[in-house]
Image (tube, rainbow, N blue to C red):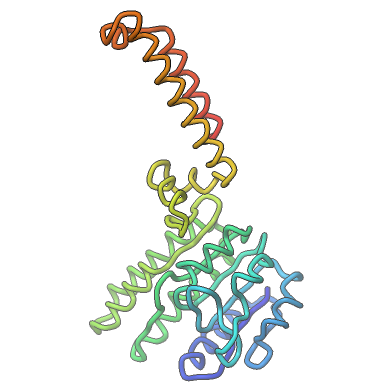
Length: 269
């Protein structure tokens, strides 16, 4: 397990402490990239040896920040190195775009937040428990990540019920709703690609993400050709008997329907 935790400002004092608490509770060997060693170069050198990558620090839509906050440890230029790995993060915003990109490039699991992650000092321990809970549960119980995500949401719900401070409730609820867990069985519900977004709405995320650009292009070409053929068939029927002939049951329509079912079965199986 590779654990990355920069420490260079007030916020990272907390994230650093939470990361140390996480590995202490798990109690298994890990390789630390803490403070000044939390660099892009060290990540790229070490990541190949590990199946799990943990990151606790600042993040944004593009990537996860290195020590000092001026460069990225992980961004879209090197996130292909996360292929086949479990990536567990406590960082703002990365789940909204950068985490999706890492998942698209083959990361086995991406645990992230699609909005800012916030906490209150008065309930810091409770926020830390919620942030660390997923990986601890994976280590101790070996559940699927889809199950772990559901349990983590319940953990947030329990924390919301426990606290009395209004701001703590607001931020716990916010963090819960920002949490995402991308897996093969739980793909992202959004995309920057217009056609992918359309496919997600039309077929659902799980099927839509299985479509590749070449398949989408092929489907568009087939549908255009299908429309042209259907139009010419209908025109031929109109020449024979007008609209009554077009609207009557024809064997050709059954054939067209079977062809479309076959196409859909091939592309979305």
